[in-house]
Image (cartoon, rainbow, N blue to C red):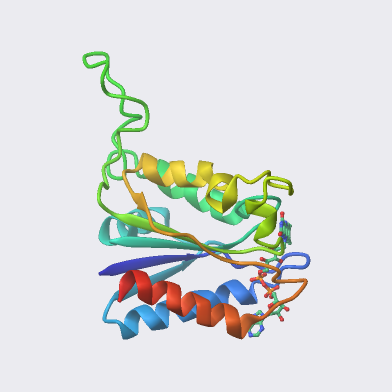
Amino acid sequence: MNFLIIDGGKTFAHSKGELNHTLTDVAASQLRDLGHQVQVTIADSDYNVAEEVQKYLDSDVVIYQMPGWWMGEPWTVKKYIDDVFTEGHGSLYASDGRTRSDAGKKYGSGGLIQGKKYMLSLTWNAPLEAFNDPEQFFEGVGVDGLYLHFHKANQFLGMEGLPTFICNDVIKMPDVPRDIERYRTHLSQIFA
Ligand SMILES: Cc1cc2nc3c(=O)[nH]c(=O)nc-3n(C[C@H](O)[C@H](O)[C@H](O)COP(=O)(O)OP(=O)(O)OC[C@H]3O[C@@H](n4cnc5c(N)ncnc54)[C@H](O)[C@@H]3O)c2cc1C
């Protein structure tokens, strides 16, 4: 299969970007060892937007590797999506899906890259229970509930989500060797 990894690691304030670059390298090397083709784009780079659209067209799976910044994706990854998905009008999506001639066609059904998959791989300082426990900060919506808008942007193109991977406590109690091992297991369970 063909993979595209969007590496959202960036040096800014107390994020050094190293953990996200490391997880990008872990995935790229493991997927290549499994016989897959892998391209990597660093979101915080001078990418060519048309080339990035072509990478989506050429890929079977897109992996978003990114830190949680202010409760969601860093602005570099949001900018990448705004740049690339907007340029993809006519190739990644046709329209918002609605048409005057058929009221059955609903908003969000105009994607053109049906069947492709995407996956979120996230690093957060917040512990997992902050997402899942109804008594804690994210009120039990879960990680994927918090990223609903991000999932929907990808599903708007017709893609389907794969199980999300998350590293927690990455500043308070980092355990990078354990996180790398968990990520390798996650990747082989899905892609081996
Ligand atoms: C603007 C901003 C907003 C933020 N908002 C939130 C938020 O809303 N919620 C939240 O939970 N967090 C938030 N954070 C924290 C953010 O999620 C983390 O800083 C980020 O996930 C860390 O990823 P990184 O790639 O930058 O890691 P790094 O800073 O590179 O590394 C994190 C830790 O892992 C270690 N490490 C990295 N790579 C390796 C390696 N190869 N081998 C061994 N050890 C390694 C580092 O030494 C460090 O201890 C925010 C940070 C910023 C800058």
